[in-house]
Length: 260
Image (spheres, rainbow, N blue to C red):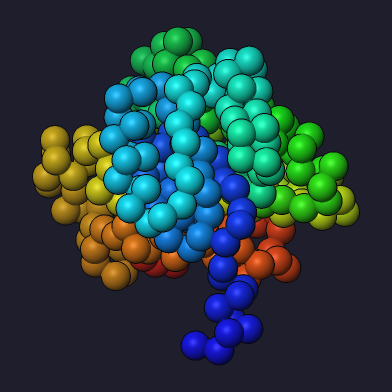
């Protein structure tokens, strides 16, 4: 590979914050970023799980720090961003990955189920982006990547999770608006919208109900679940100079699901 192309994807010397990094997609995003050279601040509510992930990621030779935080709380978000800016000297990349889901028919969904999902998936994402941007705007650069979903583009005919679907549609709108406001100052705000990956959050479809899992995979033209390396490559692209002319839009990573 020509050095000029390698430099486009090189994250050496950068600092990234990844929320929801104790399991699932967050681990794969963090792994891809540090493989590409980034130092990391990982955050989640589970300290033990977070430390286990950090210990594993340190094998790639970069600084990996942890902050136990609830991203729905403004003070925790401020402390998380400070861990990067004050602890590591800068903040270049924010991956807004923390998210939850609630399964219930729309007519039976409780106010608590609705509010908890919207608070975590939308309001917390905005809080993290806002705190990160306050630093990034002073530097005139930064990458904010919101983890949405292919279900931020379509409804779900199988899983009854109206609050989750609404939250992911909202993230696409939030991504576009933040990009419009902050792009003139040098910031990039994009989204990554995964399809089906083998995570604990998706276990209801692929482990608890194997027949449902088969039906869902049958609707993916590539005929498989996503793999960790699919996430690693995509997040490095969005976080690096390789995506510098991309702003306000989402990278769909769904094996062709939305192409039918």
